[in-house]
Length: 313
Figure 1: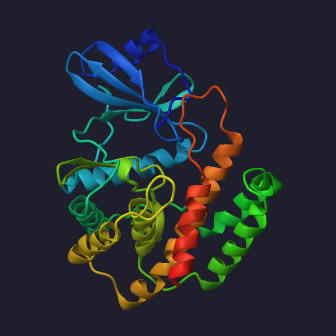
Figure 2: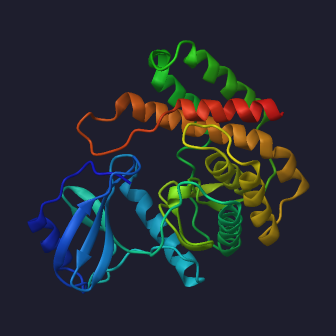
């Protein structure tokens, strides 16, 4: 989450008047993340999240995301569906951006998860995958393996300004992963970004899965690899307690299980996850506006993760 687009109190009050959610009391920009502009909105009837979709989220993809959330909510999963206005419209326009008012979920994202919390989160991902087995919507992964080399090319030699030799290092990694990337594994709708800050918890209980704006059709085990690369390391990309990564995998396997092919492919899927997040972070590092209310994330933290997974092979 982040704030790129500023919304005045007057514009927000007029926006809320379309809904049966009460009158505006306060609104505060949320600085975490780098994708969209987000506000925590309090009204006389409760608390909501306002999201304005920036350039990386295509307006044409929003129906897919909202259908997916409605599907999961209908199956009882703790996700935040968009709220529809009095005319039944979910996707609005505000400050020149597509916008949605989203249900607020209780809970906090944990900075240093325990093994018990990691196990619960892994199980939650597995339940999400099972609930989406009959979801018919499809969307190509805009940050999938086919997009990594073009994004690397767009970053270009500027990567060497982050660290010497970085472009060649990632170019080699991408080539190796492309050569080893698995085929024939189960695919379906995946979250593709289930970092600890996208999982809300109360104690050891998952109360929310949020930020589905990279959701797409891809290899399900890749979704677990993305999650492992986020949960098993600290913010600098240094491995934490090995019990956390093990618990995450155990929680997932207890609910859905992994096939022999998925288990065998997991190491390369994890390296792919590292390259994917390295590249998006590097692009943001090189291109985020200086005046944006947003926290840039260090791409080298994902190079360290990549090196760890390579060392395990």
